Length: 388
Image (cartoon, rainbow, N blue to C red):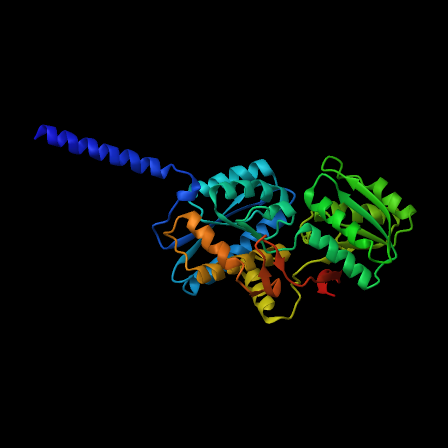
């Protein structure tokens, strides 16, 4: 009898060891025995790009709360866990490891390109489905598990050149871009390539880096001396605010045209005179002043819950959660499935989806992760974004 008890005890110990080993296995074997899909993400909740990350987190939470209040997805609830990456690739990896330890099954992120590229390598290793709301660099969707809501950098550069040329907005264009940032340099490259198909002339193209992003006097003087009547800014709003301020002090008043990184310039920069942004145009899929019913409802709900007006990044994230809802419904995956099975199911559903949201109607996706949707441009007038 003692021998039998010893054998039973040994078997129990072995089973416990195996169970503990399973708990410590890599991400592609994680399962969720409950009734909740765990959606995690990383983004800049603090630092220079915090206006983007906070908007993404807030809007994603708004969508999750709405979906749960209406019965969830196929009867399952959603849970959101968003971690701060401070717009830094190394910190993004730490943030990803935090949500991975939490048991993340679907990644909504990252928010900005460099962190998104870094996290994308990890989600590929773990075969976790990744949908970035706003990571625009080509490499953000280089793996087959990754998709995006927004346009890619090349698409933004191409569409910007087309819009300027088709509408005869300028004859001489200067460009100021960040050569150290794949987001900015990618847009710059595709813009200059597409510009060859139009009659406007690029008269100046001056770069800066993350180590020289406070004094733009040299770049602005060259733009002014070249006779530019437009300055194209494929950059983020913090540097754009400095450029607008310094251009004003020089008496240089061209038309300024930006891309989605410009969103946040009216509210995201401390001590910036927002009146200097009057007349600035930029490419964006979302204008909070739209009278479309779905946008009015979203803006109202966002302002009531969080205060402040949602930006394009918020709209991308809100759509992102509803896209996830749609592909869960289409694929039939369950929270109890392992993350690899969830990923494969969502990937298949994604390329079959046609989605109507805040950032476009009839949006579809190709297997390379890219959305197909119509672009739009806004102009800042009377301190708000207005559709062109």
